[in-house]
Amino acid sequence: MAAYTTIDDAGAFYSTLIYTGNDVADRAITGAGFQPDWVVMKNIDSAYNWETYDAVRGVEENINWNQNYAEATHTYGVKTFDSDGFTIGTVNDATNGDTIDYVNYNWKAGTTTGIDTTGSTITPAGYSFNQDAGMSIIKYTGNDTSGALVPHGLGAEMQCMVLKDLTATEEWRFYHQNLDTSAPEDYYLQWNSDSARGTSTTIWNDTVPTTVNFSLGSSNSVNDSGKSFIVYCFRGIQGFSKFGQYTGNGDTDGTFVYTGFRPALIITRDYANVESWGVYDNKRIGYNYNNWFLNTNGDRAEGESVYPDILSNGFK
Image 1: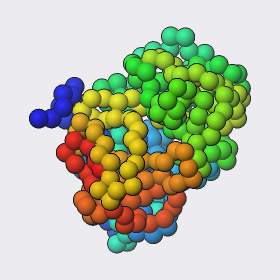
Image 2: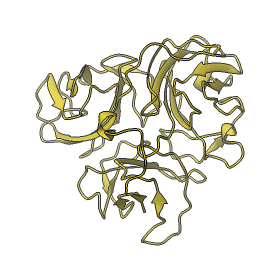
Image 3: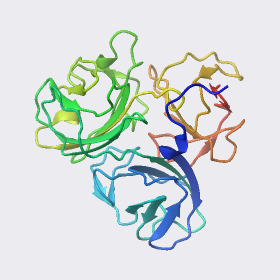
Image 4: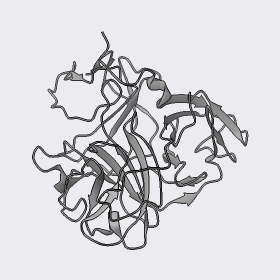
């Protein structure tokens, strides 16, 4: 029996697409099942950067998951967000090269008014959130003030976020509720790096996110005065998404990780050591049993591995 969930159709909020490039400009990629607000894509045949677009920053404005680059306009990126996917602009092997295979991850946010700002000291420059799906996209301007509070729009305590300075070559900052058993707010990872977790009180200001806001320290990577930042925020929704931790067992059969649903996207990280991020999904060839992996911290083509095995209620 499937776990209880308030979401009847998970495909209305998230989807994975695989498509093959055709070297044709203004190409519509369809099949997402909704108009996405966040689109991430990767050339999986060769070494190309991850391309990341969202409706809050606007079309053709790209940031690379695997790089610390500032935001840049890519005319070969997402030209429009459409009712069943998106349209790619000019021709480039990063997004639509002839016969090249791509993976694409899509999220639906959609609410652009009425965010709760109780206690907030920074008003978002733009946002889109979806409390049913437990995700939001928030753009804000830093003020270089320790203890600045930014609303996340999730309606419950945030469990995970990925944040990037849009105007400078700063590393991506990653927060997760399980980065430490007692004080996760003192730790961070770099989304674009294989570095082990770092410790700092000037990033998350030594403060756990509340049901309304997350806190910023004075670090330039999250709160440089006058600079623009984007942050993707998440909380777990029973039967749809889960953010947790597990301990490996060194066995070829792996540790079973219970989610309560069949995962469509799995992102893992050994946070205590120098290790790459692992990105797995249920659409690329070989997802059971020899799953093909990608890394958020690398531009490499997909590689073959032996983990994880995607199951009806989790993975191992």
